[in-house]
Image 1: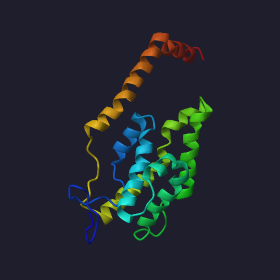
Image 2 (image 1 turned 180 degrees about the vertical axis):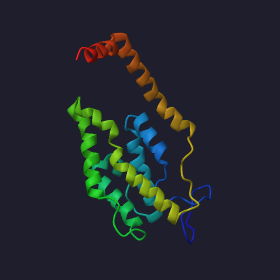
Image 3 (image 1 turned 90 degrees about the horizontal axis):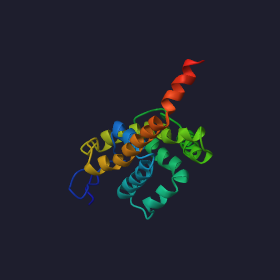
Length: 185
């Protein structure tokens, strides 16, 4: 539904200019889902942009091809803030390349693959900036800081996997072996 000033959602509330998510929630969901939240994050940003601007692109295409569409998304976020700031707060291209490289480390195996869960780091400033743009352009829009039942359920598998992993390390004696190696140095 279009209004004269801003888009509204189905409930009649002001829709955000970009996908809104509080930074602690963004980080927790990214880490807690092993990075799968990143796909949802890209989809939601493109869905919000399509709702606002129109267009015939499919947000899920851009989600699946996030490696190609990360820089354009970050550029849109930076350009939306440019009228309030003189210098861009970050380089969209550099952030997109770092995100892509950190994500690609998953294919390299340990120890480099340990960087992959932290691929959200280059995107934190982009989400912070998107939230600032939302506050300026669509101040009545929901900030998406509250946790839904679905979001808590999304963290459940990661929490169980973490507990299973720690249990396995304890069972195999890894902690005691590591402590012995450290003490004998």
